Image (cartoon, rainbow over all chains, first blue to last red; front, top):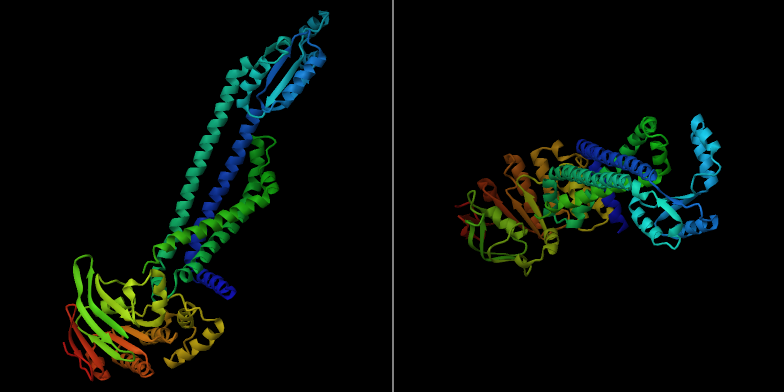
Length: 302
Length: 227
């Protein structure tokens, strides 16, 4: 068995070397496909970052009437934090709200004067609620509406923000769905290109396959070296892709960062380096082996 | 023993190639099958390797009707038979050594045995200095001798030769026939399909003449090329 496997790999490697022209062409096409695949990963990463930051900007505020005690507000906060779809809750006390307001309008003398004339703090305590997903806000509001402390709540600004939240949500969903569709279409194109390239390579050797059949080669005996050859195309194409991809990502990274501050393209692909290399190699080898497997089947019917 | 019983074949659902052929070939015989192009000589040989199926009749080799053979068993049948073709059918991206070795590999023989036997058989056909040559680096006669070496390597009980001299000059043709005669003398059944009159007359063994898909003459001993 071991000798048989050795032979299969040896013959696969020898065929790969001897068909150098074809191997070179096929590997090149597969490398392009894998680069396209890497490009899709970059686009996915960037679009999910954009969606993430968009969604991050959305939250709702619950304003409490002045008679609500801090203890009661903290209890509401506790309940919200235990509610499944809430990511985090921030409490802003009346004093904190006033402080923030003063700071925000530090340069506006009129506002400062008006505040000084007021005896009482006019601002309300509030809870800023961030959901795990923007589609969850209505259910959080529903939860608050049915809450026993509802009478202490003055207003929930969800109703003013509802339209904005819905728009952000539809943009995010649109980007996700269209991105997914585009990825799928390109992936299908990539698979077809690889499959056809390998099919042509094997078609070129159809006579050899026929001869192997005529001298008594079993299907497995004929097929195995071609599968190894297909795998080698994939592995080499993956290596080429990785060698080209990282320098390109390195040089593109500052440009991306100038458009989207705080986003590091190279940082992402370095910290997920193992997964990226594994995925590209896995997809490359799988594409090569599977394409060979399908392509050779029709030539084994002599 | 090879037996064809009432065999009919059709190409493209309408062209009748073999038209009720009955044949009986004993072990160790040398049989030349002669006839003009389109008489059905090659079809007869292709039936024996299960490249094609008859639409009626039986093809029996060593007691087994190979028409009913499951497709998995076809490689095993082909390993019992050595086949030589007019166009050599050599693997162009393999060396002479590898071409012959391939026929042993498919039989599951180990590297040691392959390393021993291949140079020997290449020596028998006079190609000991061409072990590492590719087919495109060899002459027509050398290619055919290589094909014979490949057909011989697993010591088959039957050799089928389909127009083996068709692409060769007279000298090389006689070399090939001499080799086939020698193989036959060692006990292998040889079936030679040809329309080379000189070659058939020089062999002087059983000659079966075919015409329009039928056996029209069967000269069991010292046969001559007669249509």
